Image 1 (cartoon, chains in turn blue, orange):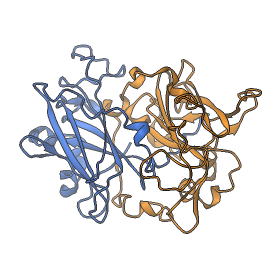
Image 2 (tube, rainbow over the protein chains, first blue to last red):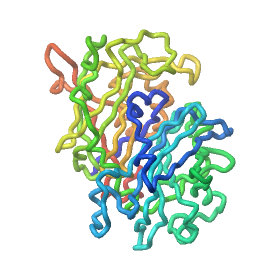
Image 3 (tube, each protein chain N blue to C red):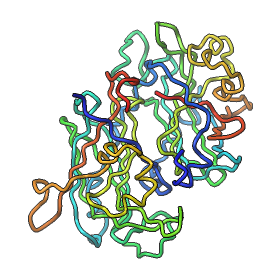
Length: 188
Length: 218
């Protein structure tokens, strides 16, 4: 018999010293030639900002390879300096940010390719378990249209919440936990 | 959403979660074994010039995946209140004393058998403003990565026999009684060091790499 999974509990309000002592929001240097900046704000169900959340990202490198043994596609380059993991607390205005590179496309279920995306976890006081969402890219219209995850979301408004907005020097990805314009969240 | 825990009311999503088919995006995950740990990261009683006040304890256990296999070389981060029930956090307004010798944050990596070990002091219960006369049972927060994105877990470890369990909406937000028990450490005489510290065991099981997610739940 397999052992039973340990349940999740909220991260609470007091995690900062333990989890955010080191700044892990820059996966590459802002001077990196291919660096992109992602900014967003976390909002609650009344539209108030959430100043005590934590956002984590996990992503493939520019070639579309994950820095993890389960991704053994050795024909794709692996950059040991690029971990693919980032973590940002939200500030007083509910804001978070990452500096990273845009990932390449990665394989999905049934051999279909997925559009470039970042996996996102949101933790916070009042969240019993993490919320999982994805950040897709606005300049990938074609790939997004055929993406096996995006294309199954029939509610177009909901689908659109997963695509970052191009604001010139930054990509904006706001996270609405509840209410009007709620972000699409996934069950793994 | 668990309305008795008031903060969930405006933060829990109301739209149903969308089932995400498993792909390389979630069967891979941050290989956090490379985190640069310092020697005393797993001993919260020796991070300052003096020893913290309180009951010294050893907390140890194994981290396993859903198939019972050890999760090796994986980062665990913990944080907790001091013996008086006060966090060092600037937003903790509980009028209990801070302890200059206790920060309450620790880290360690699991070994080849998935084992971890922390030395700390037993945290105190503390009041919060969720409802009238609300108190959190003593607990230690645990953050784990496991082997993949899908195995990421943040949870809380409790101590056996705490009279506050039945009044705590965070503990009760896990509605299944058996699942609640999996959040409670067990006193362990074998881990207990004579003349020095009480021992508690807390094993943690993460969503497994090979587990079929729909079948392994509930």
